Length: 158
Image (cartoon, one colour):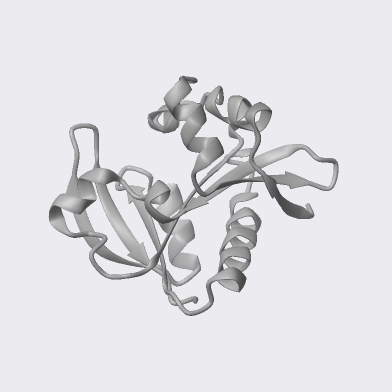
């Protein structure tokens, strides 16, 4: 699967905001609201498509990739490149996560080679944590929200 980054537009953002994941990953489901649409269009969000222009996923960087509650415990105090992303739920659980993440980490690393990469992930998402460890990410901080416990993971890339 050959991936490429394309600018986020209203149509793509609406598709992503309507994605529905199976339990327990339904935690990542979004709602299509004006506020969410505005965030996807006007913040650092990018779409990922394959060679046939099928929507594979998205990624975001900076504060868009942070969980706001992490600021209370200074989880984002150190300057690092925060990365968030999501894969089309029709493609999850099929062994495509490694190549998807590899594409994102390399793409972002080329654009910001001097900053270590940081991910924030819910602790119940063992599948994602296992995958991130394959890329050399290590747990740094842990914090709680009303909905879940999160960890930040720092990559050795950058």
